[in-house]
Length: 456
Image (cartoon, rainbow, N blue to C red; front, side, top):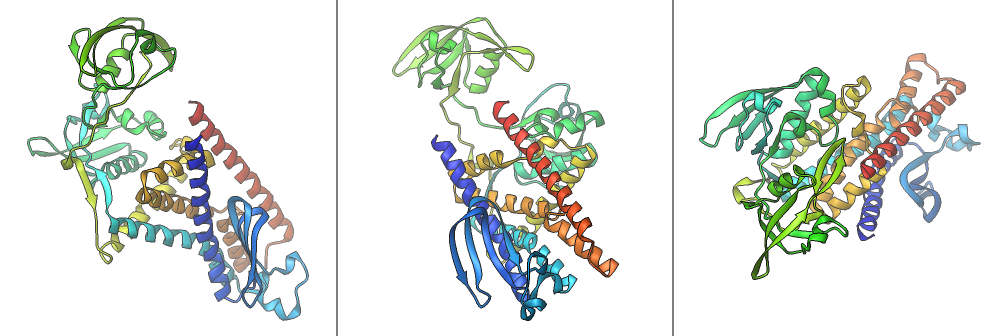
């Protein structure tokens, strides 16, 4: 329950900050271009806090439903307007000014992301070097000649100092061409160029969350994790055999094991088998026999004993990479990071429409709340990074040409500039209904993905 509470509170804080940034962009530009702002609201529904301020007696509101916000401007379409205020009504302001106000919200989110990345680069962005670990046979990685312990220096000619950079580069190359060009360095110091080629019919599946590395056929290197029992599931094979938290398993059927992944692989491959485990418990050693349970997973029969790992494995210092800059030097990488993440987001959205990227990448409030909670627990740097990424997504989403979003409103204003007069009320009403229907459908699909991840 504590984890759920942290996720909910972190989500509310994150959305509150990003919505406030977005709406402040609209508010700030509207005020400076002569629009009369009636209300600035964070959230929807019943007001929890209200304050009236400024020469225009603008209402500042904190409302009960923290899933958005709005800036309400004087608009004669919504009711009578005093003749003295008519020049400040939304419909009476120049179309160029209206477009500027609509674009100001997404612009504020982009600026927030740049500022967040700027702070992060000054603090130091931690990462792990993209060193290759296990490689599976008959996969694109194996066929390309990738070797265990290779260091990925660049993807498509772009340097990749961290795993995140390598993964994003490979994903970008996959959806563009299906051919991933890597520059790698072997353990002996030799550098070489290799290409991972993914058949066209298999590319879309690799764009599903978490599927890229598995589909390419390799994992990043990780230190061995000792086979220490963390928890024992109630009613499991391990509980029946008498295993206890803190036990260290050193051998299986006489074969020494010093890595939890190796133990997991041995158990998984032997459903229904009786395994003899050599266990160290405190200062004593004992031999325990466990009957591996046979369970079904994705149509296959696998073995499970019902324990989770309790040991930890720290990455050596040579694997860690930290990018840090001074106040001036941090600005360029912050802008570059914002640009690259935005470009990848736009590319993903476009490819989802064409069907070449999996729509499972669409996340809703549940998944976002989970990530908010995880990043908040990890620390301020991780939470700030999370805020920057969601801020970019919010900016891109609002620029889509859907009538109820900022991008759709910009389309209306551009149409007015071309026609020389506003669109008819009927056309605008139809657009609003269509936009609401599209957003409801999108949110429904996002919730479906969230729930599928939870139960899957």
